[in-house]
Length: 359
Image 1: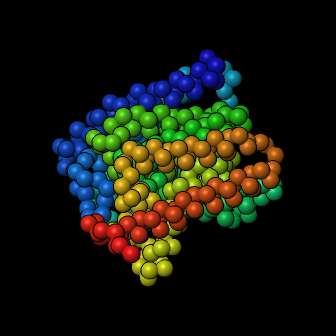
Image 2: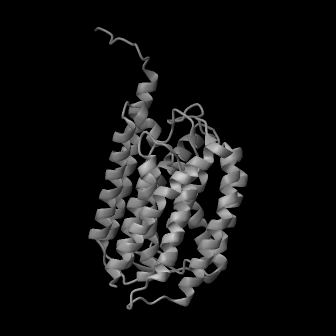
Image 3: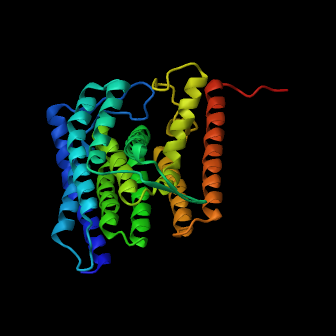
C-alpha cells in the first residue's frame, strides 16, 4: 500500500466511523438528558444533544487504530512519537469525564481551566515539548525548562479557541477540518507520515460529524467535542515539529476573535469570561442579518483562503514572504472584526422600526 492510499483509507475510515458513532451518541443524549437548552444571547434556537463530540472522538481513535493495522511498507514510526501519541490518547480519555461534567453542570471558568491544564499536561508528561519555533527569520530554540509549560499553554489555548467559536451550526467542526487538512499537507510534505495521519483522521471525523451538525443541526459538539478538536490540533502541531505558526494563521479567525472579545470586555470593565454580550464574530454577523449557513460558509472561505496561502508559501527555509503573509492575515482579519463590530453596534443602537429622519 502506498502512503497516499494509506492516508485516504484512514481519512475515509474516520468519516465512515463518525456517521454511526455520532448518531449513537445523539440517541444516548436524549436518554440520559444530556441536552443543551439555549440560553439568552445564543444563536441556537432549540434543545439539542450535546454528545456529538464523543462520537467524533471515538471515530478518530478507531481510525488511528486502523492506521496501525494497515501499514505501508515505507512507513517509519519513531518511538518518541508513539509515546507522545499514547499520551495524547490518555489525555483524551481524561478529557471525556471532565467534558461530560461541564456538559451536565456548565462549570465556571476556573474549574474548566484547571481541567484543561490537567488534560494538556498528560501528553507533556509523555514527552510532548515545544523545542523550537520556526520564524521568518530562522528557527528559535526554546530553553529546556519552558518547553513543557509552553506546550501546555499552547494546547490549552487551542482547546479554548475551538471551544469558544462553537456557537453556530457547523462552524467549529468545519474550521477544524480545514485546519486539519492544512496541517496534514504540511506534515506530508515534510515527510512526517506517522504525524500526518493524525490530522487527516481528525478531518475525516470532523466531516462525518458535520453530516449531523450542518444547519439546522441535529446534534452539537458539546464541550467534549470542541475541546477534543482543539486538543488534537494543538498537540498535533507540536508532535509534528511545532507548526505553531501554521496553526495560528489557519485558525486566526477564532484566535483573533477571542482576543478581540477579551479586549472589548476588559475595556468595558467586565470580566473577559462573562458572556451574554453577543461580542463574538458569529453573533455579530447574525445581528447584521447574515444567515447561519452564509456566515459559516463565509468564515470557511476566510479560513480556507488563509490555509491555501500558507501552503503556497510552504518551504523548509525561512522567507520574508511568510512574514508578509502573517502580517496580512492578522491585519485583514482584525479589520474584518473591527468593521463587523462597528456595523453591528450601529444596528443595536438603531430601533428596529425607526424611520429615516427627513432633513
